[in-house]
Image 1 (cartoon, rainbow, N blue to C red):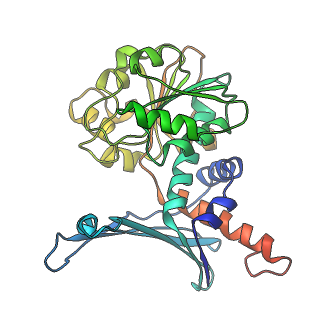
Image 2: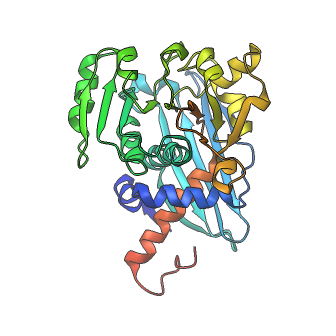
Amino acid sequence: MLSLDSRAVATALPYAALIDALGVAFAGGFTTPVRAHHSVPVPQHNSATLLLMPAWQDGVALGVKIATVFPDNAKRGLASVHASYLLLDAETGAPLAIMDGTELTLRRTAAASALASRYLSRKDASTLLMVGTGKLAPHLVAAHAAVRPLSRVLVWGRRRAEAERLAAAIRLPQLAVNAVGSLPQSMETADIVCCATLSREPLIQGSWLREGQHLDLVGAFSPEMREADNEALLRSRVFVDTRNGACKEAGEIVQGLAAGVINSSDICGELADLASGNSAGRTADSEITLFKSVGTAIEYLVAARLVWREQSISAGPGSASQRL
């Protein structure tokens, strides 16, 4: 069984290839059981969480993301979250590879947003506003740049120094990147607004949105969190990665439904609908579109298969991974 670190995962997952592979996957047939959360007692410490996210395509691919959250690790100077991905042979169940789950998560998350942007943002989108300065932010910028002709990126963060640090670190061809201080003013010129924060209060006000914008909401991953207000939902055509996940976990969607601001029929489609052509996506340049992502096990499996295939190419003809 191969053991693949973050560098191997990153090398094997160029964004253009990963976005295309996700598009094929969402248009096809995969099985994704409900993710399993288990509370794990830790003597003399707060309980930990074990998270399992399986997915498979009959006879083709099988895998599971394994993540642990040990909240007291910070007191020991250790990371609180650890993640790995186990890829298995779909015909025999034999383990094929264990790979770094953190890098896989960053790249599949960014690629899913870019896939949605392919259908929902204007084709001539040239300016992206990145709201948030965490580890995911540069991946989101690179992924969006793989599907739209971006020439300018604006970076906003609660701490201006962090925005400036990120802006200096993003180096992509023909892309001017600058930190900004005013969020509402920056939105006046943005074609795509991408948010990846841990905010519990709306950062994006619906009144700030302008015609033709695409709003990509990635960060709020629990019902108590949100990055955009109810007016943003009302002014937008709303899409999600999966209805089941978004209606249970995405703060904007959960709170909007609970308040009666939107109902389930106001969700225009999910990624599978966009990829299969069952939903038209953007239908006019003047529309405001909104995509909410919470993640699905399909994305991990697709990314893991690409990593495995890259290893087979490196290994040469006759590699055991050729058929995956």
